[in-house]
Every structure is written in structure tokens, then in C-alpha cells.
Length: 340
DNA sequence: ATGGTTTTTACTGCGTC
DNA sequence: GACGCGGTAAAAACCAT
Image (cartoon, rainbow, N blue to C red; front, side, top):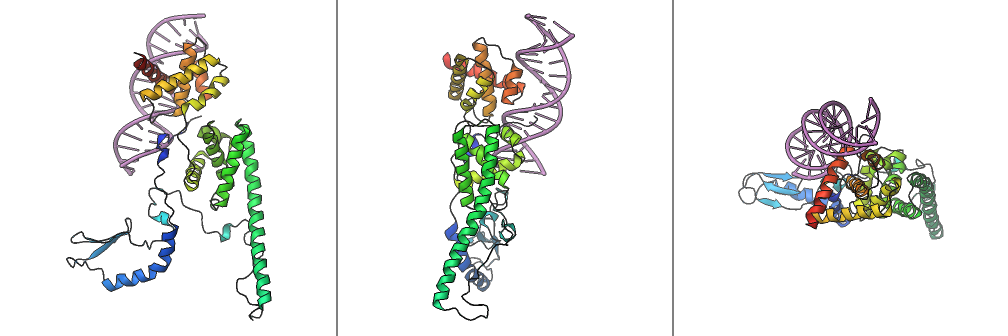
């Protein structure tokens, strides 16, 4: 029980970098040839001062080494394959999987129908035959992808179900999780990632979306993949699917903790109230929501004369006692500050 | 890689049952 | 004496730069 809690609390809204770049990618293919020719012709000389040009592939600019003139802005990036190359440092992990071939579920063992309309001797097919082949191609493709994805889905849904019940998550969360998973599958987010990882990430996301969050540690506890992979996959999925998930609200942890500790409704209400004033006072930011919730529950129990020890709270919340102490001081201060 | 912030671990002293 | 509680210092973990 070393490492705990959901990090990346309020930073999660940085959904800034998501423009669909497909158009540009298409352009690149046709333009890259022309582009290189142009470069050669210009021989990298600055039109202003005649100095040598240097191209900055990070920014996609061509700059004069002498006078600093930006010759070409936003030029085509001729770097390898994916656009993620640009922001490799920033977002290293969110790379799409390797190009498929080897990773296809059937390892390429399923039927393939060639695209050329020729028979085994290389002769053109009659138009009737061509149509027939076209139909066969269509259906073959449909069946192949369908049953591979179906299989995949079946396994993933099984996992989601298993984990969800281990975490005591309600039906609707499971549904949400499977919807997320289906979308991930449909968007080809899977190649290069484990089914386990993605289903766990989907479940984690679903739980948060439904307002019944589980901490990363809890989720990792019932999953077969490690915490960091879950976190990574989770971020990836959230970004690619444009899921809107706010940082977890501390209040959403309260009911669970309260019931685990067998506290009265009164205390539970008090805890929410504490969190509300904390929010107003802005004690919030940067702190783990779980810790805040735990502290609120503890403080509330105290205020309502219900016996709970810090240790008990720290156990159900999976948070250290020290953190509870710190938070709960802040909570009480915030409350007093508001009421005076 | 580094620095800053938050959380955890480990240890201490104090009061109460 | 064990237990609950509070505080501190150092270490670890995380995020952002």
C-alpha cells in the first residue's frame, strides 16, 4: 500500500491539443515530393542576407542562421510517419501502436482476396466475375474484422465485469465502461495495447464519469496490469475519444467512505458541508481529492461525536494518516474562516 | 534531467483508558 | 502499557519545466 491516489487532479482539463490532423496528413503525401524539390532549388540561401538557412524540424520552420529571418513557417513535416513525432517529448507515450500486419489477431491467417482483377494466369476477369469478386471482398472483410473484434470485445467485457464487481461498481458503470471500450475498439485504439490495459482504463474512466470514482490503486489492485500502464492507457483513451472527465470531486468519495465506516447520515452530510466550504475557501487545488474526502469524513465524524480513528479512515480511504491530519486541519481552518 | 510540490514513512512525545 | 493523536524530518512519488 505504498503508492496511492489519483494524481493529475485539476490538470486534466488540458484538452487543448486535439485537432484532427487528417487533412494535413493527406496533403503531406502529395506535397512532400514537390517540397524537397523546392528546397534543393533554393539551396538553403536566405533571400534577405544570403546567409545559410537552417530548418527547425521541431517547430516546422526554416530560419536564416544569419539574420534570423523565418523563411518558411508551418512547413510540411517530413519527419517519420506520425505527427506525434513533433511532440514526442511532450507526449511520448501516446503513440499509436505499430502498423498492424504482425499484430493482427489472426496473424494474417485468414483469407485474403487480391485487389487486382486478374485470375491465376494473370488474365483480366470478365465484368461479371469482377463484380462477384468485389462482393466477396466486401463480405470477407466484414466477417473478418467482425469476428476478430467480437472476440476481442467478448474477452474485454468479461474483464470489465470481473473488475467492476470486485470493486463493487454498479451496473451503469459497467455499461459505460463497455461503451467506452467499444468506442476504443471502433477507433482502432487497440493495436499495440493490451486488452487488459484498455478495459481497465475504460472501467476507470467510466467509474469517474459516473461519479463513483475508484482510485488508481484500487483499480490496479483488481486488474492484471500495472498502475502506470493503466494511467498511460487511460490518458490515451481519454484524449483519443475526447471523453470529458473532470478531476474527481472529493464529495463523490464521501458516501463510500462513510458507509464503510458505518457513519450516520448526519456525519455524511456534515462531511459534504465541510468539503463545500473547503471549495469556497479554495483549499483545493493540487491536493489529492481522496485525501480531502478522507479528512472531511474524519472531521465530520469527530464533529458528530462518532468514534472513528484516523487509522480506520486511512485504511478505507487508502491514504496515510499524516495526510488526513494535514487536510483536516486545513478543512477546519477553511470552515472557520468562512463562518466568521 | 531538474526542481517544486505533495504524499508517505518512520519516529517522537503527550495524554487517556 | 497500549492506543489514539499530533508534529517533524527525510524520502519517495508525481508533475511541470
